[in-house]
Image (cartoon, rainbow, N blue to C red; front, side, top):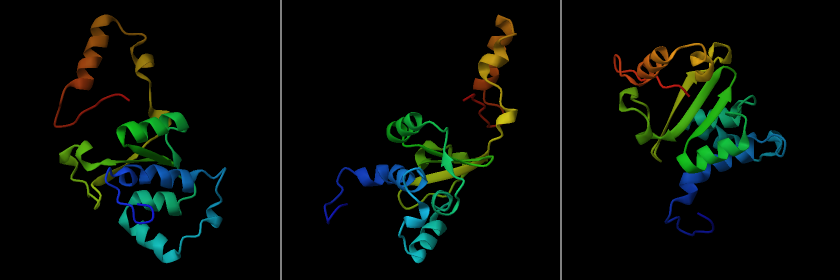
Length: 157
C-alpha cells in the first residue's frame, strides 16, 4: 500500500474511493488544475467506470447529499459512495449489495455502480405524504412500499 507494505486488511481498497472524493472533489481545498495526473492515467481511469469519469472529468460532480458528515458515515460504515451531477445520482458500492436482477458490471475490486435520475421537484417526503391520511391509509401506504410487485421494490428514502 505504502512503500511496499502489504495491505492485509484491505484498508486502501475499502477507502480509496473516499480518498479520491476528498482529494479531487473538494474544490474549496484543491484546484483541479493543480492535480498532476498524467493525461494517460486519467484516460485509463475514466475508461474503468462512470465513477472515475464523474470525479475526474465532470466539474459539476458533488457528494450527495451535500452533507460531509452523512457522506463520511455512509462511505465508511456502509461502503457506499453517492455522487450527484445535475439531475443524476451515481451510487457506487460493493456488487454484492446490489440486487442481482440489475446485472451490473463488476470492476476488478468487486464494486458496481448505477446511475439513476434524481429530480428533487418530483420528490415528496413520507411525512408529508401521510400527514393528511388516516391510520388505514397510512398502513396501506406502508404495505405498498414493502410488497414486491412485478419484481420491483419501492422503498422510500
